[in-house]
Amino acid sequence: MRASGSGWGGGHLVVNGHVPLPRRHFRETVFWRQFRRNQLALAGGAVVLVLSLAALLAQWLAPYDPSAYDVKQILLAPSFAHWLGTDQIGRDVLSRMLYGARISMAVGFVSVGIAVVVGTVIGSVAAYYGGRVDELLMRFVDLMLNFPRLFLLLTLIALLRPSIWIIMAVIGLTGWMGLARLVRGEILSLKEREFVLSARALGALDRRIMFRHILPNALVPVLVSATLGVAGAILAESGLSFLGLGVQPPTPSWGNILNEGRANIEIAWWLSVFPGMAILVTVLAYNLLGEGLRDALDPR
Amino acid sequence: MLAYLIRRLLISIPLLLGILCLSFVMLKLAPGEPTIVQQDLQMRATGAQRETLRQLYGLDRPIYVQFGRWLWRVARLDFGRSYSPDGRAVLDKIAERIPITLGLNILELIIIFSVAVPLGILSATRQYSTFDKSMTLFVFVGFATPDFWLALLLMILFGVQLGWLPISGLRSLNFEYLAFWAQIWDLLSHLILPILVASFGGLAYLSRLMRGSLLEVIRQDYIRTARAKGLPERDVIYNHGVRNAVIPVVTLLGLMIPGLLGGSVFIETVFAIPGMGQLFVQSAFSRDEPVLMALVVIGASLSLLGNILADVSYGLVDPRIRVSGKEGR
Image 1 (cartoon, one colour):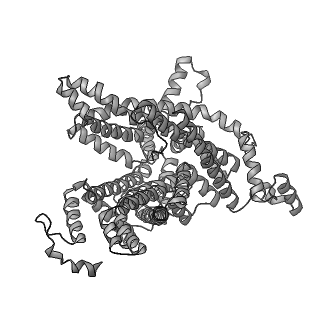
Image 2 (image 1 turned 135 degrees about the vertical axis):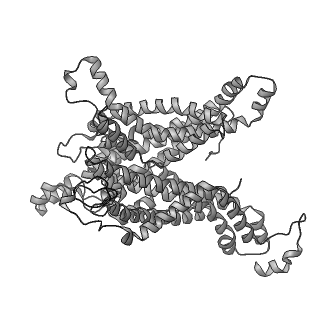
């Protein structure tokens, strides 16, 4: 493509008085201009960045060892020594929440990663081969979509016994269907666009068209969907852990701290309030970031 | 329409069979099997006894034979007996919980619709006003709030700090001895918090949908015509706009059907309400396979049915969308 492109003489091709910019450059500048204007999305991005750093640096940021218990410091209300109080065996809640952030982020990213891979592969295979294969795969997507997700999650975890890897896998493997449909639809519409037709006319191979022209463009909406998916996965993990079917204590997760909060609801409000607030802020931040990306990448 | 309905129902059958097949395989592939899982058997059963049990439950047969038999039983609504110590029929266990969950969710739906639709109309007609902006904020926060956390917050505020409302169960311990009206109040006061929490997320979602739908309708030509011929704005919005905008919102009812029976897992767990959601969590914990599978079957069937209902009702309410042979996915 590049060789033939230079043959056209880049700058000499002037359409309606506009010099066509190289595609990538054009999209990046428009993207940044759009994205920068969206203050909510910027705020969301900043929060995501801060949270990711906090999760990465939990070891150094945490004022206490998250699993160090102290029977003399049980269920202390927030104070200067323990900013967010202590739990029922005297562990520091702030430290546990910082380590919990790791779990949330890890589950969010890994499970969405699984969903993106599975969804993209199934969606592009369906779109690429079409016909029987497409029909079969899309029926499978329908089937999975009609499986009530929470039922599927709980049943799988109940049968397999919860561990963090199982949770990531199960959340990922029950969350790829929307992505598959998205990728399929995107590819089907890209297939008919001028730049693909022209590449085909120039004699590019199917494989090259797929990997160089179609997939990179189809991945744009996938990125948006994945960002929103991280929020969903974090919510799902915290919900499972809250029920006691997710991350198992003593490993801290926001969900299982909330579960302990529920057990001590009459005496220790701080155990319930702060982890939930962390979930709310994180999910909100990812949602705002995702919406902002969507608006900036697809200024319709 | 009827032909379409029948066609959709026919398409659903292989989907449902697929879901059942997948569930069954999932169940069989999971490590461990019933004769080993049951604690007391594990302690005492000899190899020969275990073999007898396997034969009794047909576990020695090939998997497709087991699936066929299971399917045949499910078709006759025989879900077997619970593995829990009470050993009751699965269907009985479910039947006694359905009214509770159903009642709770119908109340919730009524509240969601009667509040979300006006809210959506208000923010659409005042687009970009302070009210609309704060509604948008509410929607974003609503999407991000875990309902079990909201439940805990309200329990702490109204139950523990203020002491106004009870925080668990459906009735007080002395329920039997209360006068009739006191009984009604007792039940209601137990329901206020769960219903409030359950409505929250749906409220955010539906009001957003109503807003978007109305905004789209307002841009249509027939609205401009209505304005141009001098109708008062009120008539334009309510008679011409809202009537059309509410269609996609109403059809969502179909999609909410599976949630009617199963969607309240968190609410029922937090508030200790003995409904379907709580049964599901309990069964998941004790790995009560017959109950789990029955709930999956019911949930999947309702979900399929709800989808069909949503599509069909869309066609019924909006004559422009006469469903042709093609599927409108």
